[in-house]
Length: 473
Image (cartoon, rainbow, N blue to C red):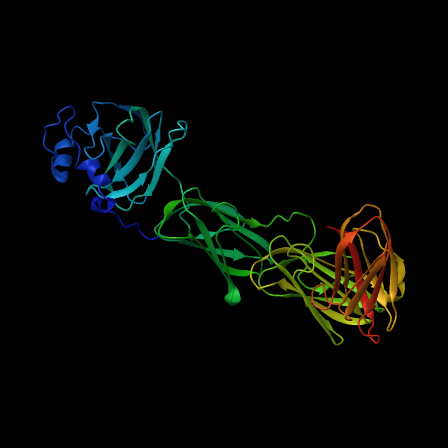
């Protein structure tokens, strides 16, 4: 669990808190001497109001309240007896623009909280603290500056927190960080997709999950804002969950929620097995590549798509002398592989580009028999066609442009060095490697009319599948 918090002496506060305690004077008596800190407390113990835990008190800062000689603000003190191990919350409400401070019996500052902004008079100021030793403490309510006056309410309460270092699945637990992290043991009974969330308005949440066979995951802000989330496919075993702050030795309240992950769809996750053509599947990537088997009964041009909004998708395909990979061939960070394949068994590996990240992905395969691929016809803007090129052949497609504008014609192939020609309306253009790699691209302005696009290989002996597309720019 968290370590005990170290206290901060008044000298470390750059003079602000010193002015609060050392600088008080007898109200309306500017010539009175400033007493020493310990003597001031000793002399004032009887007159300082007492505050009990669980009590709500009403008071007011006025020109008769004690004076902070450092900045001219007014303040009021309250004695508060507290027990070791209790987690307390002190809240300052009302129209006063004020701050709260908590000191121990040695006048060491334990916690402080800035007040609400001037434009937000409805918000409350609060501080929380876990008490290390039983004794008398002092709560100080101070105005933000010399102009801060008004009534206020002071409410104190003890907060109920989990005291166990073991968490069930599923469960919810409230905890308190104080200059360290809290560690819990979690037992996973069945393999499945689980989610761990840490939320806090006090600290920048950070989670670490460790488990069998060297398993380890960390997360900072995946739950949005400064909250943390770890979602992963876990095998049965004993895990250790650490909740801490991302930076420094922050203190504050946090909430942990553990449970099964709720997918956006009702699809069943599959992290291995057969990849069937035209049957999409959902998987969960957590750092290790996932293998699927693709079986083709006849030669076909195959399109593999891996889509994810959680990480940068990456695909690999190997088998029967073929090895191919793709990072961002799809839209955004999605992966797409298009290859002509012979009948046989192939392995599809789904992973992230860098091996980092985790999350849900969709994987699907589409196939067109090679004898069904068109070698001629019409190409429409905004659509792509897949075709097969025989060695030494030229495939010609008609393009009808109804509206003049800038257009881009792409010829892509993993089987041959693409070469593209475009002619019509007095125009003749050609390209070899204007696209990525050995793909071809023609980008130009086209007037309304009819054109012909010729797809061929740079060498007459090459053949294979290709994709031809036309898009307006």
